[in-house]
Image (cartoon, rainbow, N blue to C red; front, side):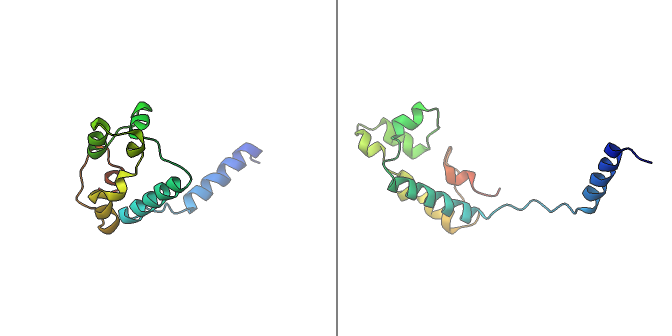
Length: 114
């Protein structure tokens, strides 16, 4: 007669052997990009986004375009705009699967299934 822990171990081993492992499936990059854009758009509705200066102060990396705005002589209100909204990388990422964008620290680049 098997002890109770041994029975439990055998039971779970049988279940694991009987369970087929599903292949890892990633969401399409276009879908990830659209979801991200929607989240940022909704976040903007609840109040102003962090300015680029505040974002960088929190050790977040900026994309090349945000870096340009960060060093520009503009106020914090302008630096709180959603620059992704007008960026060609967003448009490409939302419309093309595995879009040919390679900007460093761009969230849309990170969503591409490469």
